[in-house]
Amino acid sequence: MHHAPQYPGAPTGRQRRLLRLPIHLFRAGLGPLFGGRLLLLIHTGRKSGRSQEVVLEVVARDSARQTWTIASGFGPDAQWYRNLRHTPQATIQPGRRYRAVTARFPTPEEGGEIMVGYALRHPRAARTLCRFMGFPVDGGITAYRAAGEQIPFVRLEADERH
Image (cartoon, rainbow, N blue to C red; front, side, top):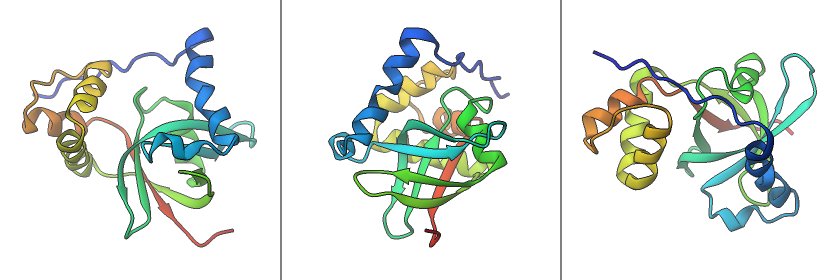
């Protein structure tokens, strides 16, 4: 039996301003300070058509394939997630350089594997993320796989667009 996730509401006010602070650090060329754990995502607003920016945690990185995997901690209704569903072409700044990417949306089974890999690399962060999203985790692989099957992940694949 799967637990129905209770995604937290999007941040507002002071919390939102605080979460947006890393955007200014990336703009100032200080993205490398985050050691590859965060990236700046520049995407197109589905209603406004204007460029939008958000800093997100990198859940998995594949240097050989030039991919970055991110998760929507606020669920499938997060604005950036909905925007990528509408327009998957985006730009990321994982450090100092910008990369053109296309968003792909892993299957629930792939999401389970992504979460297991993340939990093995970052056990404390994985536990925190799952609790934040309302998933019961006991630290076991089965619980992380079940949570990952319900988390909306996005794989950003580098492309040759300029």
